[in-house]
Length: 228
Image: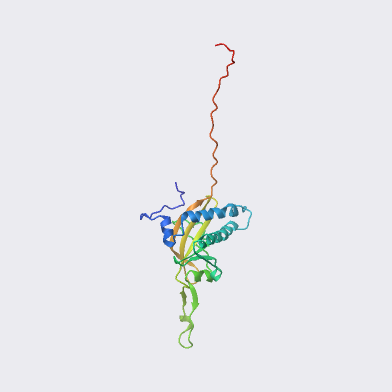
């Protein structure tokens, strides 16, 4: 039974989560992403105590997962880039740029009613997401500065996606989704153009299995010379 904070899938088309991921790239799958997150979480993230710096686990999860994902996908022909000082992984064959983030908040991985809300993005992330901001030059006497508008253009034709993660220690899970954001020219998130919500990564320790109880048969010992 699903927890009450996880929405059920209303998609009746029969398309699975892995089908949706494969539409982005055949190199992406739920099992691959879950495996990387589990390997990153233990022992690296799980070793932080509750007395660590604020969000130290989230920061460590982001940093470790960024490198782990880049190492994994680069072996499949993806490019590891740090364009505009933003670590990302790119598949030009599939037309996708993927960036890790652990800043979507507790609504990450939940379909309804709330959605992830990432903090205001810097100019580097905006340009990667196709929102490169520039100012049009004004010819003296031809236009008033007050009429000037900011315009945006992308640096390439790659689709921009986040691999969003949220560590929920209360429910002992990491919620995950692969989603494409829409930003305004100032770096504020307007909406999500597509969200692929994966099952959460279960962090609960496996229950200990008690050894099977073996019934010792009762053996009646009768002395050799005993009479009936």
